[in-house]
Image 1 (spheres, rainbow, N blue to C red):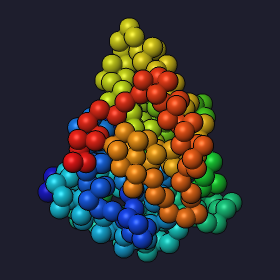
Image 2 (image 1 turned 180 degrees about the horizontal axis):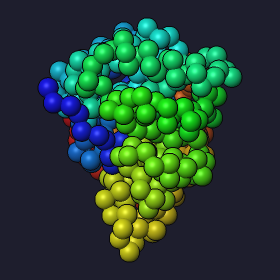
Image 3 (image 1 turned 180 degrees about the vertical axis):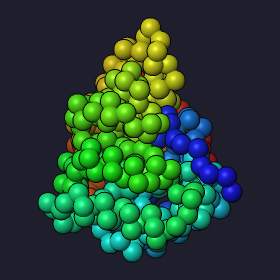
Length: 309
């Protein structure tokens, strides 16, 4: 098996469907992933908006297997494999590499706060050494608003220096463009820097970034990819403004339930509304508000309903 090519473009933490007993629904997930791929969006399954940390390690492994068995190209997958337990991170990462996934999106262990860069370095280093596979490609996941465990520029540089063929990129979901720009200007050779939302996509591309890994690519994939593909065009700023309008609507609601509500509305499939506790689905008023706001901008998810049939 040849080494995976580095990712670029648009990926999304694919929302995870659940059955009535809150078991992950592999068939719906396969259909959703195929719809994403039709719109040129890669699959960062088990990301934050996938409810990843409400899924067990075994559930994630089974879903990875089912996706590949269902015809999803593993080279388009960047599953989240960073866990609080080192052994879970190793187990998930090993399995992703075995399946031929193009890379893994790796959170730091996030339960203990205030840990040192030395401790975080040891965590990532142990995973790399225990997996022990030249085909492993890690994209670090910097999301301090949620994890409360930031990845410093010094830590990232140390990992790149020690593991240049393994630690090949980062998703910056810190929400601070200055930090993303610092990563882009650090001089790390062919290190792929992804913005954590399409809000920053155009600025990221104009400064040498690789694309974005965004929650709302679950619902607006074609338009986000269009900006990625045309960021040098004369209408790039207008394209960015259009993306921001959609993003702003979803950010007015709890994000994960809202993304699933949109899949339910435009896929004519109410089962998509289910979330795992402690999350709760949008209530009736919120659902009406989201529907009205999306209809007000003539929003659409072309082909989604047909993909489910």
